[in-house]
Length: 99
Image (cartoon, rainbow, N blue to C red):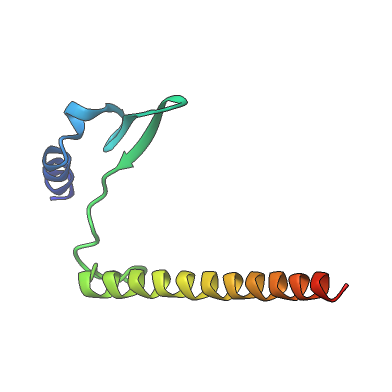
């Protein structure tokens, strides 16, 4: 069943046309950049269908919630870094004006 899922995804994404197969379900996709051709590696795996002792079954809603939480956490940390940089710059400018 996993091979059918991977094959369907590979066909849907047109990976066989776009790139070169470099592994069982892994493709290298060429990307043109101003600095030349670079490659993106795309690996297709089937999601865990059934829970085991080691791994839970894949849950799309849970995966989306986890990703959204990671994105929010990164945005919060970036905002904190940006605020700290702005405060440091403001303090530096205030010191320069005082001199």
